[in-house]
Amino acid sequence: MKLIISTMVLTSILISSCSKDFIEIIPESLVTVEKVYKTDKDFQDAVIGVYNGLRNPYFQFWQFSDLRADDTQQDAQRWIAEVRVDDFVMDVNDPLLVNSWRDYYSVIFRINSLLSNIEKADVSVVPNKELYIGEAKFIRALVYFDLVRIFGDVPMLTTPLSIDESYKIGREKADIIYNEIIKDLVDAEKTLPEKHAATDLGRATKGAAAALLGKVYLTRHDFVNAEIELQKVTTMGYALVNNFNDLFDYSKEHSSEYIFDIEYIDGGFGLGSNFTSMFNMEGQDVGSALVAEIKRIYNITAPQSGGAGTPSAELRALFDPQDLRKEITAATGVYDQNGNFVPIVGGITAFTKKYMTSMAINNDSRANWKVTRYADVLLMYAEVLNENGKTNEALVYLNQVRKRAGLPEYSNLTQGDTREKVYLERRFELYLEGHRWFDLVRTGRALEVMQSRGMKPHMTVFPIPQSQIEVVNNPAIFSQNTGY
Image 1 (tube, helix red, strand yellow):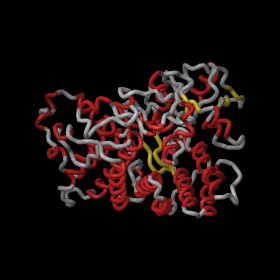
Image 2 (spheres, one colour):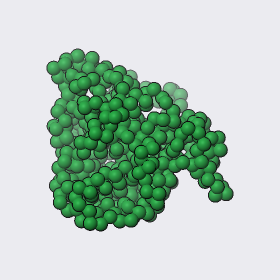
Image 3 (cartoon, helix red, strand yellow):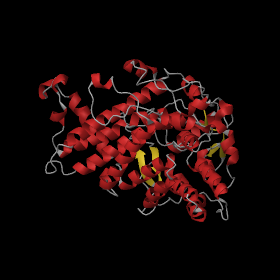
Image 4 (cartoon, one colour):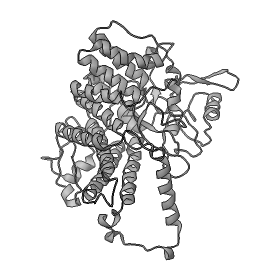
C-alpha cells in the first residue's frame, strides 16, 4: 500500500513538473467523473485516493480519542488548542472541529462518487469491482463511526450531492447512522479478501471489517452480535507478537497482530505522519542528554518541537512494576549505548515511545496510526464474552494479553471483577491508540471519571462546527448539540 501511494505521488510530481507543451490541460469545468472512471486501474487509483484521504483526519484523532480522557494530558507543551480539548473548554469555532469535519466529509465525498460510478461498471472492464466496493464501504463505515462518536447526529450522505442539495441535508439520528454503518460493514465483510498480496498490504481485509463491526456492536451494547463478529477474527490467523515493543518498530508494521492502520510514508512526499514530531521531547524541559539519546536511538535528524500526549501520573501509578508495556507506554528515560539510564530531569515526568521512529524531515514520519490490532480484538472479545455470562472463557482471552505483558494470569473472578479488569487492561495495552475516551463514553463512565476535570453532562459529544450550522442556516434540521 505504501509503495502504491508513493508511486502515485511521485508520478503526479513528475507530471506536474513537465512543460505544458507536453501535456493537454483540460479545463476543470470540463473534467467529469465519467471521464475519470473508466478502467480497473482508474477505480483502483480512486480507491487509493480514498485511503490517502484518511491521513488528514487521523493527524488529529488522538485529541478526540485520548487527550479528552484521563490517561493523556497536555502538560509538556501547553499549546492553547490542545489545552482547550484537555480542559473541556472548546468552543464551536475550534479549528480541530472545523478541520476534522471537513476532512472526514471530503473522504465521504470521494467514496460516494466512486460508488455511484462503479455500480455502472462492467465486471469485464473492472474485474475487481466487488473488491473496490468492499473497500469503499469499509472506509465509509469507519469514517461515519468516528463522526457519530465525536459529534453524535451528523448528516448521513450515501450519494454524491450538488452544493445546493447539500445545504438542505440535516443531521441524521445516531441510531440510523449506526444501522447504515452496520450495513456497509456486513457488505464489506462479504467481498473483502482475508489477505492481500505483499504489494497491497495496508488495504482493508475481511478481518478488518469483522473487527470493526464487532466494535460497532460493542459500542451499541449488542453483545451477542459483537461476540459473533469478534469470534470470527480469532479464527483468521492473527496472533499477538511476542514482544510488545515490536509493535512500534515501524519496519515491522504489518505483523501478525496488524489488522488495520492508517498508513503513512516518509521520504518527502508529503505523506508522512506528524506523530513522531508531536510526541517527541525535543525542545521540552527534560534534559539535553535525554533529547540527544532519543534522537540517536531512533535516528531522528529533523528538528522538531514535541511535547504532546503526556501519560498521566494516575496511569503510571496503576502499572504493575513488572508490566513490560510500561517502559514504552510511559517512559521516564532511555538507555544510552553503554546501558546507562538517562532519565528525564525537568518538570515533565514521562513520555510515550509508541511513535518514535526515524525521521529526516519534520512532520514526515512513517509511524502509522493503529486503528485496530489483534490485542484490541482479544480485549473486546473478552469483554463481550463476560457480558454474555461466559466469564471463565473471557479470562482466556484477557490472559493472552496479560501473558504477553509479563503479568500473572487472572482466575476465579466474578463477572463484575472481570469487567473492571478488562477496562483496566485496555488502558495499559492501548494507551494513545485512539480508545480511552470512547471506552469511557460507551461504558457510561465518562462523567464519573472526567467531571473533576471539567466535563459537564452534555460533553459526551463535541460541538458541531459553527460554520456548518451557518451554512445550512436552518435550525429545524441542523441545530447545535445541546449545551454548546
